Image (cartoon, rainbow, N blue to C red):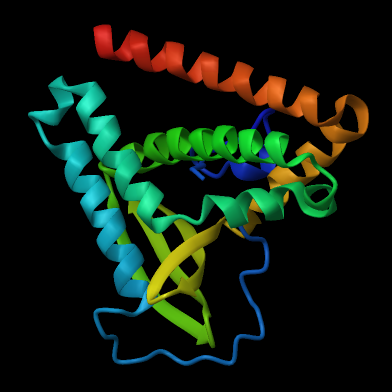
Length: 221
């Protein structure tokens, strides 16, 4: 995904990358070490989700059933990503001042945008190889390092995760050192300053409308 409302050159290496999707500080004082990983470890959980998403995207039957494929992908992403926390972090201080109804509408639209962009991003991974490298943990937080390789191109994709009742959920994704959440927070802050929350919601709806038109054209092509 690069999920963005406007282009940002810093999000490009070989292709414009999303999705989706969030975290600038790749090197952080986590104090963790690589572990002999169990099934419930964050690295295994996010790797399992990404592998399932790739399998769905490669499924030849689902390629002819775009609606069903999207539904299955969105269910998978909903389970693994903490969109409520991502939305709160993306709004920053404005989160506390936004009307609860507008806040709920924002989270719904923002999560739809992230999911749509993430699916597009993961779809582009099917031509190469995704490798999960290591994890760092501190209490209920974790940072999982991975890389995508395609021919001579390599891209780092790192996931910030939080443990909630035994489930490790993503709340930010860092692509080549660029935090998706921070990118959105900068954009949203400017929009809120000039257009308030109603303007931001209007922009999100417009962006989603465009993406859905693209999806419809692809489904009918």
